[in-house]
Amino acid sequence: MRKKVILDVDTGADDAIAIMLAATCREMDLVACTTVYGNRHVDQTTTNTLAVLDHIGRQDVPVFKGADRPLVKTNNMDYASDNDGAPSSNLPVKWSHRQEDRQPAADFLVETFRTAKEPISLVALAPLTNIATCLAMEPKFTELVPDIVIMGGAHNGGNMTPAAEFNIWHDPDAAEAVFSAGFKTITLVTLDATHQALVARADCDRLASSKTAASQATAAIIRQLINAYDRSEEQISTGTAPVHDALAVASLLRPNLLRKCQGAVNVETLASPNIGQTTIDLKCKGAAARTVEIALNADGPEFVRYLTVALTGC
Ligand code: RIB
Ligand code: CA
View 1: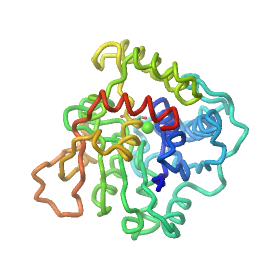
View 2: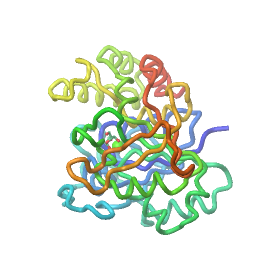
View 3: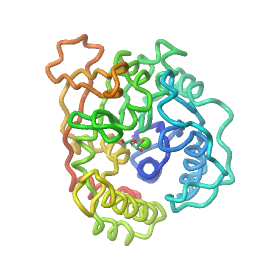
View 4: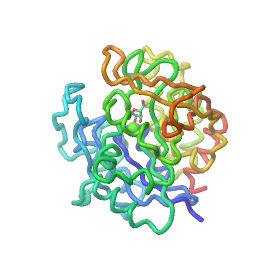
């Protein structure tokens, strides 16, 4: 049976690849995408999401726009809209003539999980504001969602600040609410894991050779990511790039891509400069409600092999 998923995205580069992976692989049934601010303003992430789905012929997948700013700390960054309707220039996709659905993302998520006849995995690849909003709207949301996979957090150093990973940093209050809500199964795919699943230029050549729209676009996006990482101070291994969100999606169908351990995750919501830091307690003595399956390691070569096969329809 195909695995039903809903992706919560702030479509930028790696979200785009995650969407194409979920929408292309025949083992997966992409029910919908919900969007949120993060990599760009939510207007832009929504435009990007629609354009990516259209690019691979998946105009059937509905998109629901969500939050345009964090629950509490709205001073983290400027959330002014910068959307002229065109997809972001780093995405090799054309304008979509579709509009997002009128229903707000959180309303859609609560209603969908309330009425679901089959299990749907919720995959959060962005700041967790939409998910926390669902918890506020429906306290039983944790019981309605069979499993949630979150790309975020870090055990050994962040990428937004030395302490915090980008998705958690943007809305630490939402993240703390999600990690403490008591979801049945939370899988956290951290930066520690994604930085072990690196894609190289030669892998992009192989991806491009399979000639599908998804694999060609993925190759082009990752080549740009590699160039950006090579210019940045992140010291990822030269000539490679992590594809954070795609690893989180891939792990749903290939759990053996990740090495996980159980622990508690606490989020710093008050003390600058460590706002958004995730403290991972692998000997958690805390309440069972906070127990998370935490991926700190990943099988990089196997991820690259799977990505290449899956984007050709697996
Ligand atoms: O830290 C990486 C995460 O932040 C990814 O989800 C990326 O798309 C950004 O949202
Ligand atoms: Ca993302």
